[in-house]
Length: 592
Image (cartoon, rainbow, N blue to C red; front, side, top):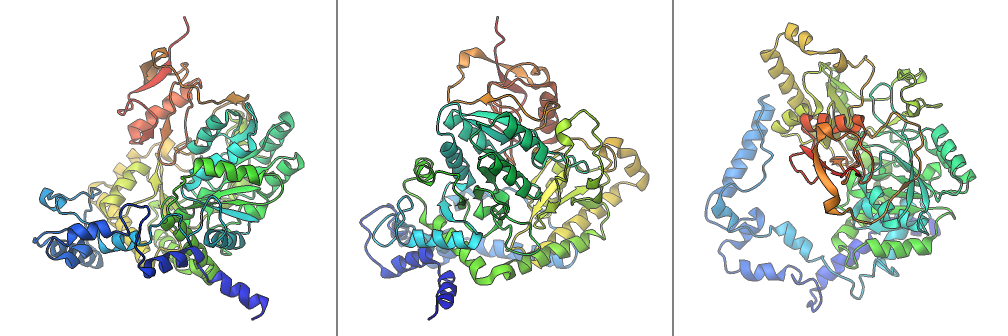
């Protein structure tokens, strides 16, 4: 067999997954962790119940007609959709019958997975010292995604972001140039590293009002002002699938001798199909974190860290990964990363054919529903943004939004009647669960697993929402409801939980982060309406997408205070706030 055929055959393997299958089929007795003993513990108890096999399919042991009821309900919903009727769905997935809850058992699929839920034993390798099937699986991943070296992550992209920052910040007080609107895991990494962050204001798309990434001029200014910085950290694409070419920024970083680190959590599929944007690695990034579970086919928490070039200390990186990842990593999660990679290696670009067809079908249907518009790059990007001098960071020298992930279908109600939150609620009532929403937009996440039936379902839901509205409102009332601030052609307002923008210089002064806790007696709770001017004692994080609006120790501007209030009233959820009603924020007591 020649080398080419060996390479092709190797790419078709899923070495880690195959090892787990071999372990399952060996039927060896387990005298090691985990304690469920290949699921055996549940079989012992279930054998005492009648109808065990039926229970394995339904997940409920009883003698009611529950399974048949659920089946009839599913058939009724499918028939309603075919007939153009709309079923009202509930987002409450708990069992309503308390007697059923008493008899819940693992379903067959869950028990099957337990038979492959192993640990570091002979033949299964060790994530933190890979020499066998895990090493082979990671090497195949590096080949697939264009990296020199790839690492499996079982703690999501969070683990990758933490390890990268702990690697480049090799001494206390290290300076890192960081895009302002980053995921909370980046802030946590800065805290763990005891780093100082110089925040870079992201460029803002003038059409949508959404932040994308720092402009090339902003990055150039930052590396010139702080040549001692350990690296540049950006996020691309954003939660809405918006992005641009990273190559110029990578070139600026490398000319300054700095690594470019990219949180590409939502771009694991980039570069795998001609209709998809290019990957950060292909643009020259040194360290790239991807959530394989988000946009590809891995289990939740399955992610990868890809490395290339000489600018990162890989020995130290391995040490940091061992610090932030579990010493008992999930083998089913790692095997799902292996299988996800194999899917791309075997099928290539064809793996995305069905998903892209679903997206195109949805867009064709949206063209017949002018009320619901689509976010996409506009020709007007060539023009000067309409922000004047109020936000210097929003005026780029080059286009900052030239690529849109086709799998992120971002829609909004062009009449302005429904906010993004309101539209999400109505979609969920029709059985369509979006990825996220904000004051204006709803993000519908498609992937290589999406189907034409998915597209038709959401179109049917939007038609239903539109018809219901027409029955309740006349065209005249629509015109009276819509205000200037809701009109797409007006000067945009910042509407997204993704944005964290200040009307200030495009570079901040270095902001010190540490693990020093804030003493409770030095804090007070003040109403959101009155918090401007205080220093925050907690992190305020709209979730999703997890972008902090304010950090502990940071002074709260009137703009941020208003932003929290607007988001609260629009129905946003927050993490980090001690007041779960979102009426007050914990701040530092004023110095007397």
